[in-house]
Image (cartoon, rainbow, N blue to C red):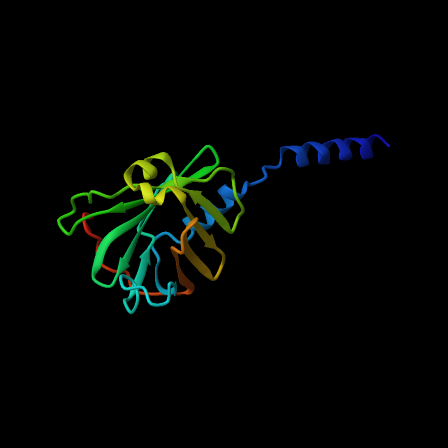
Length: 187
């Protein structure tokens, strides 16, 4: 009987000490696994977008540290965009770093938002933050979300109260050749 009680106590302590990953941490770890890889994307919405339609869309998970992941997003020859993900206190922030060809910051840069909870392991939602509202008043109702599973990464935007919607998906089963550095980066 004593052995059974000892075993039950051990199992109880082990279970209570087991670390359960939050949705944010699981999502972050999955994003970290893509470090160094490059994927081609497909524009899904809007179908006839003038800025993105008909152009090669590429994401490169280029820079990864413990708390920051930078993913340049190329639209044809335009290498101005980088998605910057940061994790702190079980919340993930998404910012959009925009650069000119000479590497200088665009006037409209570092907008985005932070998750309001730990989210789920395959999806994180980023409502527009105060910085975004001040920088781009029309974007105050923006909600970005990123989905991530074993086969697909999607970047999404919806501007609530308007028809503005954007979605690009990347097939994670088909890595492509790593592109040159985005604007403002050194190889």
